[in-house]
Amino acid sequence: MGTHGVVPLTIISTLPDINRHTANCIVRAEKEVFLATNFWIHSDASIIITNALRELSKRAGERGNKVVVKIIYDRGSVKQLYENHQHVSPKEFTGDKIQLPAPEDVPNLHMEVVNYHRPVLGTFHAKLCVIDRKIGLLQSNNVQDNDNLEMMVHLEGPIVDAMYDTLLISWHKHLDPPLPMIGEPAAKQPIPTHDNLASKAELTDAAASSSHQKQIEI
Image (cartoon, rainbow, N blue to C red; front, side, top):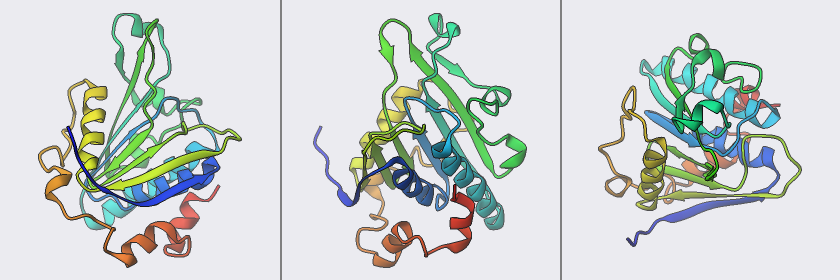
């Protein structure tokens, strides 16, 4: 099926630069964040994302609302021999290898985590993030440290619905809680930053939000 959209930003750089842009988008979420990666391990790269989640919870609390966060990654487990999609408990996702924030540390986020792997057939290899069903980030890197030159494409417009559908199909499980934007396609929303230079600058200028920058520095 054909679609269209805009690409206001492309990043070709090392992993910290890409993850900082992801973090800048995450902290500006108003309703939901849906993030998928092949592999997540506690690292300098993951700290940028987890600090962004803490900042998002703080901002949501100041607004008086809660943001739904879904994270899906692939960390092979024996349990996946009989069930490919495993819900990850807070005890597990706050452990040494992952170190996502504990629910009590992000009280204004409804966070749900799934571990998806298909033994023998292969790994879950998607690497993307959709924020408020308005911004889609498609990237080459996992959430881990490496010395690679990586790439991210920032997408907006109806094309984001295709990314959203991919995430929903990959998730497979019941959504608890549901995603607030599941009935509001990107195709029916205004493009958030394409014609808004001030908004675009906020997402790319490190000086735009000094308090946020302190939160996501390594």
